[in-house]
Amino acid sequence: MTEECRVCKAPTIVHNLLHYCTAETCGSAHWDKPAVKKQAKLLRENMDQKKEFLLKSRVPLEDLGGHFVYQLRLRGGLNSVYIGMTGLHPNHRYLNHIIGYKASSRPRKYATALISFEGPMKYEKAVKREVDWANELRELDYDVHGGH
Image 1 (spheres, rainbow, N blue to C red):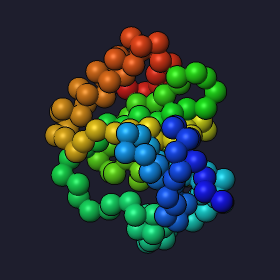
Image 2 (image 1 turned 90 degrees about the vertical axis):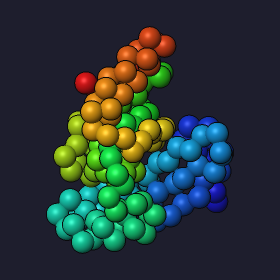
Image 3 (image 1 turned 30 degrees about the vertical axis):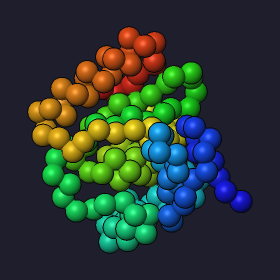
Image 4 (image 1 turned 90 degrees about the horizontal axis):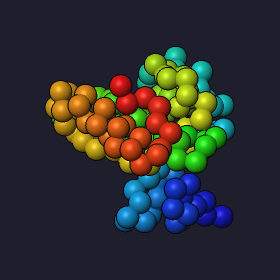
């Protein structure tokens, strides 16, 4: 059985527990959250296991040359999103939210998909972009969390 993208409903390709949308116009991804949470303690406490887990999921671990700004869709409200910034690949950061490793509480509890991300970019540009992106979405009546 093929699972569909949580954002656009297109088919996904699964690597380990990470579902990648196949639609060129979407590009979102989502973790199988219940399955990931069963391994959360191990992934939080054993960095070698976490690294292996991410590699099986095809998440880049090398230095990506800058920072990313990312948007997570949140459960519980129409157009509810979380905007964040990270020096990790956004799928890695999304995993950290789920497993409770250096995680903000709202995405830990309510994130359902990584909608999109921008980067890599220099730190200063990412700081500004995080605030700007959050404000752009607020102007479109999104319920935005994060984005400081």
